[in-house]
Image 1 (cartoon, helix red, strand yellow):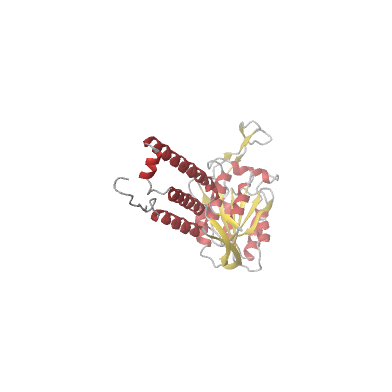
Image 2 (image 1 turned 60 degrees about the horizontal axis):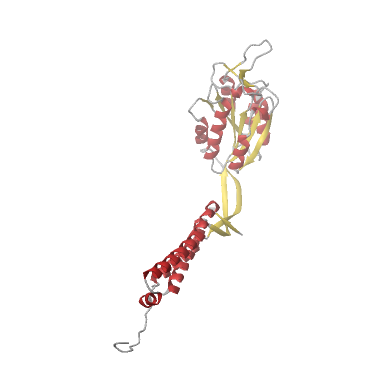
Length: 342
């Protein structure tokens, strides 16, 4: 099977018919110019040493050389190469709060957008660790199971929005429970849960489930996103007009970071608590911590990789252009002595 590494450059092949047209008009212009110079029979005798066939052949070589150069630029890839890849790392779940309170704008543009940006940056740092995503609000579910496909994980991350879970609230207990059940393997280590939320827990027994997770070897890092000061939760109508969420009495509901609960969760599971503020990426600090942990072999697989073959086309192009360079347009002509005055 043949594929091309730079197939977006195929438009450059338009240069080939352009070159053919160019040479056609150049040769035609030369012929007309010679006709204007004088009598054609006399001009032919004067230019008898110039070979029209060689001129045409040199032009063909240049056009073919250009074609092979363009083939090299689109990087044809033929055949496969087998490589054995061993990966060592940790199983990491990131549980992201997608409740309405995460739309608060005390962190620009809002808490949820900031959290998703940090998670995306965190995924880019991973080298062999499996990553999974849990979305939670009033309930929780696995958005992306543990995977080594970081591109797929980012795709699932992009669609994590408040409308994903209809149940309102922030149930940290459910988030930890779902993540704990989704880890693979019986080892009581190699498991990390990163919990990103504003911490306004509406569930029960969060410390009990945290201790149960710790007994299973799950280390929980908590990231509090938002400010401890109360801020309103924005809402938009179908026309895009902005308002704020209100209770039944018409009072504006305020949401604020509950860092106390998040600190307790982290301490109960041998993890750490971080508070994310504008301009700082706390997940980078978490990555530095987990990268020093003991790792396990997560996958050992063989995969096919296409091999570049552009080198052959470069060699052919150079070969043709060198031949063109050493071919002369002139040929040796033999003259026969017919007398002094003939």
